[in-house]
Amino acid sequence: MKEAIVGIDIGGTKIAVALGNLSGEKLAIRNLPTQTEIGAYAVIESVSQAIEEMLAEHRLKPVSIGIGCPAPLDIENGLVMSPSNLRAWNNFPIVGLFRDRFDVPVILDNDANTAAIGEYVYGAGRGYRNIVYVTVSTGIGGGIIINGEILHGVSAAAGELGHSIVQPEGIRCNCGSNGCLETISSGIHIARRARERLKNGEASLMNELAASLEEVTAKTVVEAVRQNDSLAVEIWDETCRFLAIGIGNSISLIAPEAVIIGGGVAFATGELLLAPLRQLVPRYVSMVPADKINILPAELGGESGIYGALVLAKKTYLRNYQTYAV
Ligand SMILES: [Zn+2]
Image (cartoon, rainbow, N blue to C red; front, side, top):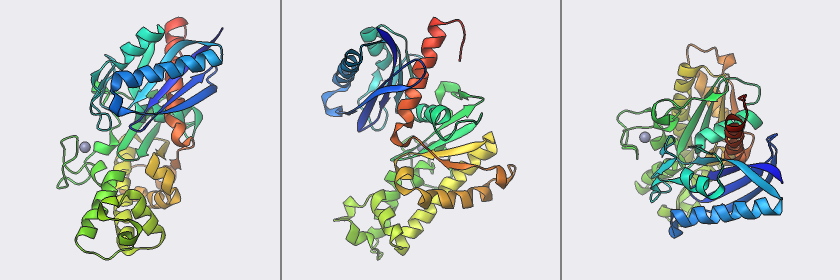
């Protein structure tokens, strides 16, 4: 039987499972819903069954598994530590479960890091040495790659761009700080800011686009921006301005060759987000010349993370079974 590496990308609503060969080509992919209601162990059981079916179907045997999962994680001990979209997964031994089941080395990293790795190896980051990857989604995440390696830092907490503080007097974030970038420019908070303004009785097309105030989402805001609604445009401008501040700060610290923007909000908006960022970010960066600031869209869409998980699996396999490293 031929050997396969396995990638798993865990999200709050969906889990992607992929098989790849040792050259790094993706051979098969399957998406499963994240049934949080059945409990973490049952979810991992159904993911394991899916992997077994896929391996059998392609007559492959696994040699390593790479997992991307929402933070916080205890990477050294292979534990999930109650991420905001998987609250009940607390101290959950995800690495041990897959290692016991498949008897192969298993590596875990956070989903923003795996997405950064995916883009670095297969997507918009190809050919660069240093990149910052930013995911603008329901939350805001980040991954930093320096000389081809993910920067983990203390407690693997590096790259948390969403929790860099851009407004010290701002509202309380889930993480406990005030005024994190995530409390302004993430999908959830774009919607919250819109709802607060609408609640004050401000006129806006958003009142018609959503059935009720509770149903106003980031998508509603974007739809109204596209129709030139002035309140939505104001909220969007603020979203872009604070994102530009956060991204600018990361450029001042890292001076990366490229900043790659991915995540659901970025994919859904494209140039609506990228054009203002290209214009605004240089205003917040003084030490890196504007013409050296490269802001690029992610190229792999929703698959950056699963590709990164495959890269992790491959590296783990090579590190464990061969005398050279990649
Ligand atoms: Zn925070």
